[in-house]
Length: 306
Ligand code: GLV
Image (cartoon, rainbow, N blue to C red; front, top):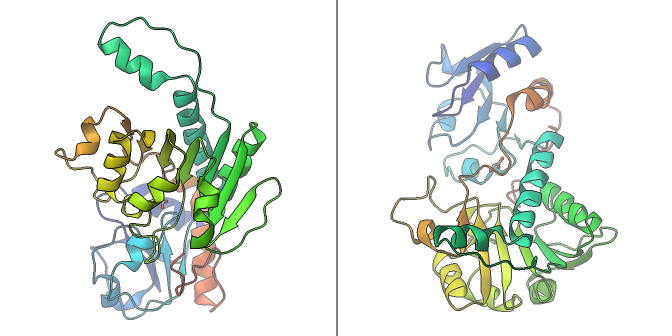
C-alpha cells in the first residue's frame, strides 16, 4: 500500500515528509517516480495529466489538493472512485483576507488613484458608497464570505442552485431567482464551483441582470465567465470594474485583453492557496478512511461535481 502525490510543477518534498510523519508505515511517492504503480491505493491530485489516474489499478480513493475538483473531474478516463476535496479553516481565512483587501481597494478608490498617479493627477474623491453585496455560490467559501461581509455591515444576498437558509443573508435559488439575487448588489463575488451547469454561466444576459455600475470579483474559476461578455459589460459601463483572480487559461496568456483593460485588476490565482501544514491531517485521515472503506472527510458528490 502506498500513496502517490500527482501534482506536477510543484515542489512536493514538504508534503511528502509531513505525510510520512503522519503515516509512518505507508510509502509516500511522488509521481512519476512510482516504485510499483499496482501498490498505489490512494492518490493526492492537482492538475494531474489526463489518463494518469486510470493507470493505477489498486486505487481506493482520490484526494484533491485544493478546494475545487473540476480540474480532476475533467479527466474523462478518471475511475469513479470516492473523491475528497480540501475544506480548511486556514484556506477560508485566506479567502476572506483577500476579499476584504479587494473590497477596501475599491471602497477607497485605489483603482482610480493608481490610474491618476500614472498621469501625475491630484484629484481627491471620497470613498465609494458600497452597501450591498451578492455572493454567487453558497458552499463552504461562499457562505463564509456572505457572513463576513454581513458582519462588516453589508446587506448581503446569496445565490445557489439549491435553496439555502443562512441567518442574515437573503438566499435565492435556481435560475429563476438569479436576477433577484443580483439586482441590488454594488459588489458581486463569484464563488461558484465549476460544473457543466456553471460553465460560461456568467454571460451577457447575467451581466445585464446586475445593477449598472456593479463591481465584479471572480475568485472561483475563469471558465464560469464568458470573457467577451465581461469585456463588453465593462466597456459599456454596465460593470464599473472587475477583479479577476482566476482565468479560463492559467497563466493568463500575455495577449489576453484582461491584462491591459483599465477597469480590470488581475491577480495570479492567489486568493486562497492550499498550505501543506494545515491540510496534512485531513489527507492522512482520508487515507486511513479509504483503507477501511469509510466515507471520506469532505467527500464530493460525483453526480453534482462538487
Ligand atoms: C484553488 O483554486 C482551489 O480550488 O483550492
